[in-house]
Length: 183
Image: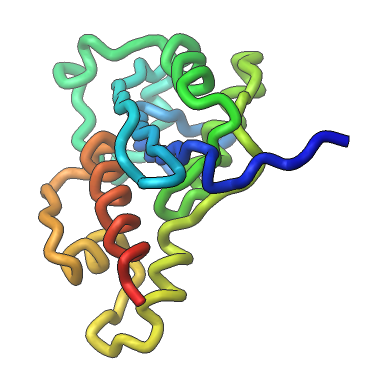
C-alpha cells in the first residue's frame, strides 16, 4: 500500500463554467475558467479560460444566455469542447477541484468527460469555497447571503455585470485567499 500524498502538496484546480441552462441533460457548457494554484502557498501556477462552441444553442434557456452574455459574435472564435476539456484535464494531474458551489460545475464537467471519453486526471477531493465562506463567516452578522457577489462585496473585491467564467473563477480564487486568512 502506498503512502497517501499530503493534501497540501496537491495543486488546487479552481474551475468555473457558464452554461446554456441548469439541466445537464439538455444544456451545454459554453465557457470555462480555470486557475491552477499551488496547494502549499496558494500562489497561481497557471491560468486558462476558453469559450466553447455550443452544439445545440436551440435548447438554451434564454435567461441563462442573458446572464452570461452569450452572443454569436462573442462566441465566433469559440473552441471545440473536447479540446478545451482535454486541456483542463491535463493541466493539474492529481489536483483537487475547487470552486464556488463546486458540485454544480463539477457535475457538468464530469458529464462532458464521460460523453467525450476524456479521462479525468483529478484527485477525487473537492473543495467548495462557498462552504468555507459559510463556516468562516457564519457568526458575522454583516454577511446575509452566500452568493459569490455578496461575499466578494464583503471582502471589497470588484465584480462585473455579466457572468463570465474567467472573471468568476478569479473572484472565487480571491475570496478563497481572503477566507483562508480569516479567523
